[in-house]
Length: 369
Length: 174
Image (cartoon, rainbow over all chains, first blue to last red; front, side):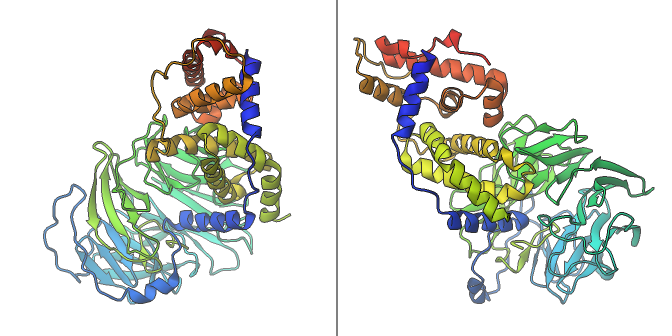
């Protein structure tokens, strides 16, 4: 009887002819998907940027949906507990903003301020109205990593003969780790390059990067190093780390665990990038439509209005709240939402934060890069 | 061999099989093409991360299955609403193979997407329960229950022709 069912299914399937897929279209779409995932937003037409000169004053509300008290725009003291974004050379945080005088390529938030990579490859620390140059990164494809509740920021310095992993403590205003002991000249920069020197993440006092030993965990205080995965070949092998839980990218999707050997697949999650919640109870992949799952695969995705063609989580505020970027079209100015996992509801925080090419979010990489 | 060359070789060799499996899951030729295209784009984007390129087909199968299920949830592009109890099938015997095939097809398309995917993976792709669970991103026990429930509904739908199908409690466990 089983054979009859099999035969019927096979007969039905072979009755239909399918044209061969358009390989060029697949490759173009796949390359575009990589760019989109690398920076969260779609690579839109650059020509569209020429018509976006109108100044937009964003409407601000806090993550709980209540209006923020009117703050002085153009203040240079930036709060760290409100939604933040960069548009051109201006860094916004809630109602405050500061003009850094140079295009902001990427930035991250710490518990004391912001760290920015600008178009000249400078790493700038922004704390309480003071801007200090603290390092250098690749000007074209900068990458900064930070943790939710610490003052540490990491990057790869490429000013020397060989790449060096640096960790900066913004609270103490000093480089606390500078390590080129396992890099070699010529190691590449991007996640999908072969043999990159790549800074994956910082979790608490532990930095995770890839050097000639593979994926290593380095105690920032002592420099003590543990090889987590000697087979890590590029920047995709480790996606994120929170609360000691590592999100690996395995053969068939995301795997979570405290070690490579104990990591287990996150059911149904194939996207190769995303963000763990602060306590690692949930994961938000960089999908085409906002998606949140808990560790057993249960769908916790909040509801974004259907007028958007693209939306994805870019930041966890706490265990129950995410921030989401949403686009109505590839050329549109991005809207930023705060979404509650508990209620599945979303509140518009910023209506029109910026367009692709000028907007940056606190993810440490260039959007659409 | 470049990334594109490797991918082209994979697409040329496997796209036919992927299309057929997708067609059984969604029941519509155009949708199956969309599903396979979406899956192949995902696969190309993931290509650098697939350390063992021999696993690309498993990756694709998983992507087809989970994408099909999520499309049904999000877009409800099935015009035929899935039901807990399928409409009654024929009550008198027919041995017309074409008619049997059509009735089975109709019944399959009316199953909830997870039951349909489980049956296609088990009886068309000939996967083990473990492999099916992996492709669906669920537990082996869920595969057993989805297959069993799906087969039971198909038997109800087929009426007297139910001997085309395995009994739910005789579903092969591998």
